[in-house]
Image 1 (tube, rainbow, N blue to C red):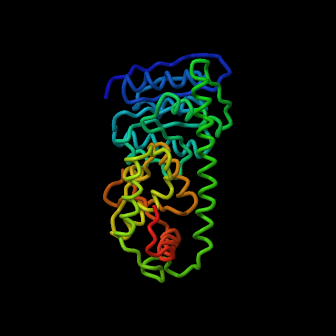
Image 2: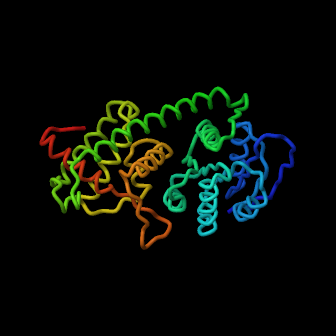
Image 3: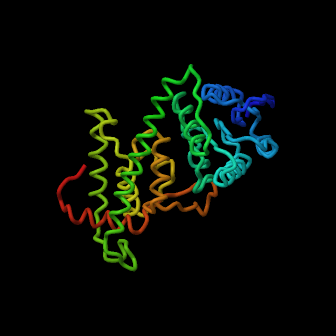
Length: 305
């Protein structure tokens, strides 16, 4: 991990300050650029190891930006857990920007969290994530002229995306609830048996479309994740968060947003890996599994992609 010199920007502006912690000099530089482009002032720039104490001293801080481009082990996990608690308690907003390689340890430390997560995000994705986190915490978003047009467009896209997630999940959660309930709504109860090859063939057909058309035309992460988890359930396999993000066939940041909402709507269940505290598995909730199996039984041999 590169050495980072602590830097405190003393300012008497009324703008809400942001504390930045990063794992390298390059990561810090990118985080600072993002915060400035978002129109917020930087309260402090500190290396990861000093972040916790700096946040505790920064009583007026309303946002924290954590830039992770390397795995720092337990120190990173503890900081993420602390930030998650603070955000859920309403102390400040927070964004964690990281890489696809760190999805599993990061998500293991952010259970049921309102922290915004950006995975390998573009500049506009990053600015939009901070504006969204700030808005949820009641902090007005102030985009600088340099990034305003691009980021405003991305914010509109994010708003549309969140609205679509909410609408889709409302329909999905209503489906399983309407299905007849049993004491064990799973393959061990009265749910129909679904062949693994049936689900696998549908997943394969969905992926083949990308050879002929843009994947964006068919983006349906909720359905893709449901199919992947059903296939894993039938095969008795465990699915970590990182693998499920790949199965969603959308950018990882979007996949994580869908994953969180599916968990919130009781369609997915997170399970801690008993052998690795830095990994979380995802599985179908019993009611969701039951509904999927009844769906496949009803459509019969008709190919559905």
